[in-house]
Length: 204
Image (cartoon, rainbow, N blue to C red):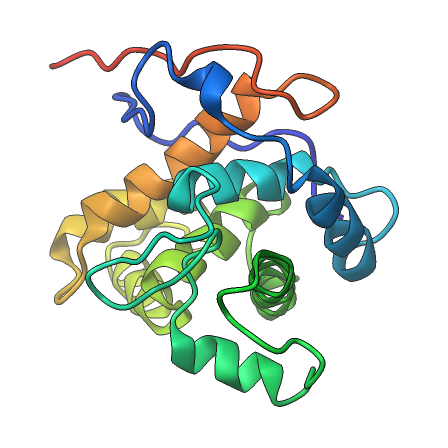
């Protein structure tokens, strides 16, 4: 079950939206986040976790398009959506916000299950979201390196520690991504409304 908090992993926070923009963030997709969080993670899941992910991915912009070709609210690659769609043919388009959100949360569930019983409970979400961003194979390589350094590969802190040594990984992006999801979750009130501006970034 998805818990109501995410671990704080980094000392410095990277805000997704500028101060003063919080009130501009729409709640129009809340029903969709509620629906598919319940469907794929169960009645007790905190749907706001996935809204926080959508805020981090695209600021809930259904027209968002990344340089790598990721699309929509949950910034899915077309290849990932196509694979998911093959088992859910009624999800017609990656550009439809409902299907984009549904596919993103289903992808989260698959990653959640892949990490189940192989990482510490309190770090389970971090491994799921880190894999969503960087790919599970990258995180597995980081685990192997952590083990070689006599670190606990079941802890996300160990992954963060060895991350700079993992080849072909934009680790700052992934670590910041996981952290920003936690920050965006903290911005949401009990109804899922954006209640606070993101924390300001402090330079070391």
